[in-house]
Amino acid sequence: MSQIYKPLTSAGPIPPNIPTQFTTDVGGPVVPVANNVNVFGLQNFISNDNGIRTEGIGATLFVELTNRISRNDTTTDLQTVNDTLFTPTDDTAYMFKAYIVGYDTVGGFAAGGSIEGLFRKNAGVVTVVGSSDTLDENDAALEPPIAATSVDWNIVANGANLDVQFVGVLGATINWKCLFTYIQVS
Image (cartoon, rainbow, N blue to C red; front, side, top):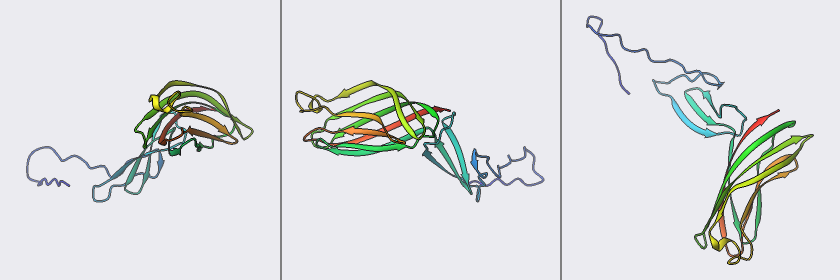
């Protein structure tokens, strides 16, 4: 922390004013305590056209990347794991992009790709209108003919929710990560 002292009799410019509060998008203003503000970065599934928002609580400022969700899961052998991304708002349409990566901790192999798509929610039910793998890459050991089946990942409707689905292969323990981003309109 620095301190500025300016005697009343000396020459020179007046020291700058120190802000006493910072306005945020959500919550109250952030008010420094002893000229200190704590700043933290977060991600949030809340829909926001800007993709970023600020939230203030006391002397703490949260800078949130919105419209994004991340999920981590593990598949063992031929296991299929569904993980809920979120429960979309009713009577809305969404465009999304999901980045997915997996690492086989047994064999040291990798799989990954991205999916783009469109879904909607009406009357409490999510429907995936369509999706396309825009990138789909695997080490050869994670697909036929070396493996009996191929690893896979999907974005799927599950009643009122939207899920990411990971599919493993025999003899592999795969740690998965999905970063899901979207835009929404109603």
